[in-house]
Amino acid sequence: MIINTIAELREKVKEWRKSGLTIGLVPTMGALHNGHKSLIDKSVSKCDRTVVSVFVNPIQFCPGEDLDKYPRTLKEDEALVAEAGADIVFAPTPKEMYGEGHILSNDFLTYVVPPYFYVDKLCGKSRVGHFDGVCTVVNKLFNIVQPDYAFFGEKDRQQLIILKKMVKDLNIPLEIISCPIVREESGLALSSRNKYLNEEQKKDALALSKILFNIKACYNKGITDTKALAETAYAYLNSNHSLEYLEFRDENDLEEKKIADDNTIVFIALKIGDVRLIDNIKLS
Ligand code: PAF
Image 1 (cartoon, rainbow, N blue to C red):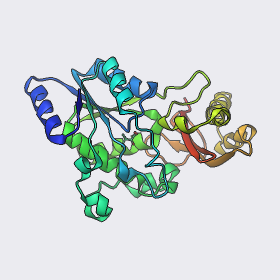
Image 2: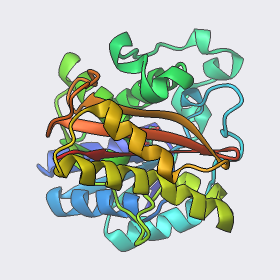
Image 3: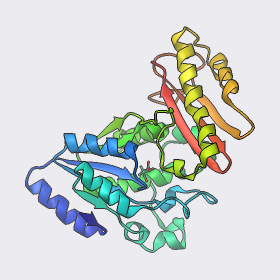
Image 4: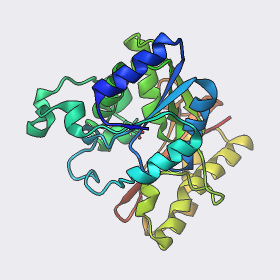
């Protein structure tokens, strides 16, 4: 069942609450793939009812990013959600979510702004304002659906850490469930942006997972100096790659690690042509 308005969704949620049902929310921007399906499956098995939101959130795109060309595949998304056994696709328009305000200027919108320490690094460094847009829309979705559980993928690990912090700091009464990265057999992490890659770029994209798997193997052999671990990446890079970052950070607070341990996450962002891909791995 597809719902486009906040009012209609609220009515549905009210009915479920009256019947004492638990509610899971899977926030997405659509172009759903098996990574999203794993989140939906988890919600369906844990909750009585599942809402999947499909909303390409304009306020989390920075100027010059891919807002206009971001893949929009609502029909296919609806089919995947129904097949996975979820109950509702919530697909609002930008106007439904933000009114006229944001179209005129973002100055007319109340934002949820995560702590600077969490956003001045990794993706937040090049995507200034991105996490303000993510926290704002996710907060709105939480207020609209009032779920017991919300499901997010570890693929966007910085986002996951920031959203957990937001839920804690703002006493939002729900639990965030994190779900492991789903990879192709080749190792490539599933992402809606993989649709932008041509065949040659897809081969180049394997560098991300190869670098991460190799760093983990080196760590397992006893190398803990993160500078030495980072240097192993160069063997996998060619002139088609533009490395944005390769960083070692704590899994809870994103503090930089000089010496890796079992709580370390290795984060990578790489550009191949115009396509920017991210991935990460935990060293334990
Ligand atoms: O991870 C995403 O797809 C988006 O950032 C999210 C969480 C749905 C917010 O728009």
